[in-house]
Amino acid sequence: MGKRVGVILSGCGFKDGAEIHEAVCTLLALDRAGAEIVCMAPDVDLEVVDHLTGKTTGEKRNVLVESARIARGEIKCTSEVRMHDLDALVLPGGFGAAKNLCDFAEKGAEATALPDVARLIRACLDQKKPLGAICIAPAVVAAVAGDMSPKLTIGTDQGTAETLEEMGARHEAHCERDRGRRRSQDRHDSGLHARPQRRPGLNRHRGTGRQGTGNGLNSTGDGAHPADESSARPAAWISSMGVNGLARKCVTAPPCTRRVSRLPA
Image (tube, rainbow, N blue to C red; front, side, top):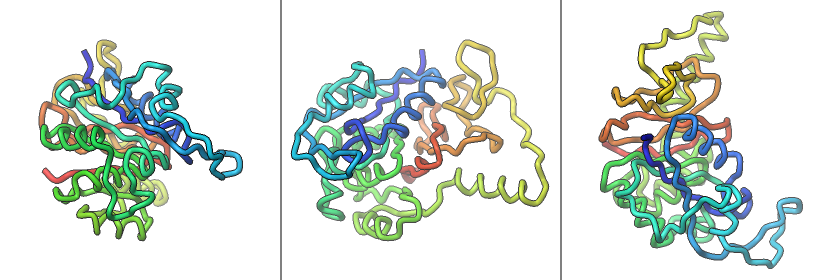
């Protein structure tokens, strides 16, 4: 059986909920890796934003109900989920992460997360399990675990990076995967197109005997390794703290989802 990975959604639509591309790509990568996905969202209301005009409508919708659109109805309330039943936790981005999972959009460095969201993130860290945060979602991690000085990236947004550091986080503009991609691009630009040699046993799909293509978690139980540098798509790294055979796994994501939370060992 695959690892059970919790995915915390914050609505449906990047202006007032979860960024749909980021959420779907996360679910797709986890599914391809053979993970058992547990979608969840808080049972709270959100302020609706018209995605055509970018203006608020004055309407209220429920975060759990809206998130169920992405999860095709197979979703739990965060209050029902316990981290000891999961092997990892992922938070896709979208303004909902900063508005519905916590109040970072309103309070900045003084932000706090919803109690059940904070409980799950803190338990994930205490149990030394992988935690992934995409796009603006590292702000949720900083709001919960700033006292642990988590290493994370929000990309090249200097203002937001300074706010996260004010919250106690340690910010890096580029994650390890980004650096690897730059090296690969440098080789390509210089005419060195040779693909790195794949090591045996990496990213093998569970039960199929097929070699993976750098698009998911290593589920062979032989000690996880990152996908090789030849992967055509960037990846969002999940820091694992090196336990339960889950060290250094990654999930693929489109270019807009390369930001992650990486926590100190």
